[in-house]
Image (tube, rainbow, N blue to C red; front, side, top):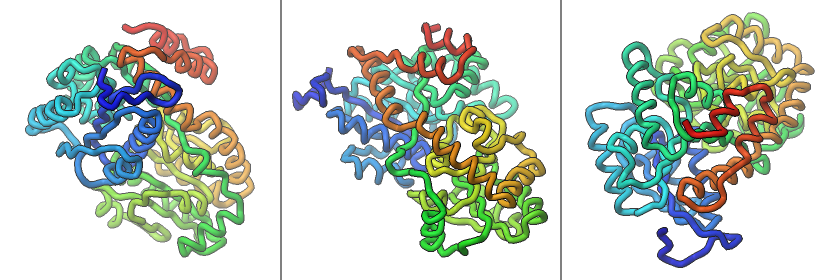
Amino acid sequence: MHDPCGVASPGGSTPVRVLHVSQPNAGGVAVYVGQVVGDQRKRGWEVAVACPAGGDLPARCAAAGVPWFNWPAGRGPGPRTLLESLSLRRLVKGFGPDVVHLHSSKAGLAGRLLRRPHGTPTIFQPHGWSWLAAAGHQDALSRRWERLAARWSDALVCVGVGELREGMRAGVRGPYRLVRNGVDRRRFQPADAIARLGARTRLGLPAGVPLAVCVGRLTRQKGQDVLVAAWPGVIARCPSARLAIIGDGEDLDVLRRERGAGVTFVPAVRDPRDWLAASNVVVLPSRWEGLPLTALEALATGRPLVGTDVPGITEIVRPGMGALVPADDPAALADEVARRLLFPAIAESEGRAAAAASAAYDISRTVALLAAVTRDVAGLPGAPDEPLSDVLDAFPGMPDVERVLDRTY
């Protein structure tokens, strides 16, 4: 056990030395990693992050007092993946962690390609399985890889029930743990009409305009192309409506060429609270998800959600909190968004229900469960019983989930 300073964490428990590895270095995963390392640092643990330069994750590490190592890895697999894996192994050897925590598919690939780095206990957290972004031969290859790599994972942490079930259906067998994503409800609080007006004033938006907001990286996964295609149908019903698409990404130029009246593109913001507070409805047109932080932030802000009927979103958007539509269906998306812009009473009622539901996703529970999983992987006392009861309480009648959390395949 590495404890060079002989420092005990709060409560007298033994500190853990953890290296978090992440690619991407921005977006929801960066927010998540920043929250986790900040919590673990406060516990007195020795924590560091390896990720590519750029994005906002290095800055989040600095704000939390957590060391950052430059790991120059691309987003997708390719000819350089072996070199990225070797580079990561050198970082692991230099830092000497008790646990390596790999976030997202690229880190999961590089961190397990040569098996566990130096035999170090390893957590893999997909934040959305790799095959969901693949097609054809790449889809099959991704599934085979994840089934194989699970052998070198001491915990497979899923951010939601949908993600866990996707892994099970794909034949990925391993030591699953459910640690649902959470939201900081001290920062994201229900925004009433006065708060909406204040947010719009700060953003330079008209007070009374019907506003839909979509926050996320501009990629095929997030489905902003479907929302742009749906928007003329919203304008046909509600001519004064506006849409703010907030984020950066590889699809920006294409989306700009295809946008219609009332659509504004806003560069990615580190703090989306004003945009969420200013909105009448938040839209998530994703093609796949883990358990999106934007959705949880919208809930906590008291905003209704119109999202796609895909795992990860269906887990959040319950009856009375918004609407679910099929993925890749612009007409259905336009109908549900327009309905909430045309009838504010519906949106307000759903927003109140959303704010109440956000209590089930408090970040304090998320980081506590993840800390317990990490201690378990490190071989220390504190193995979590909570994930199993959490699933069964929130989602009764799911024997497959109970089985996979009750034992390791």
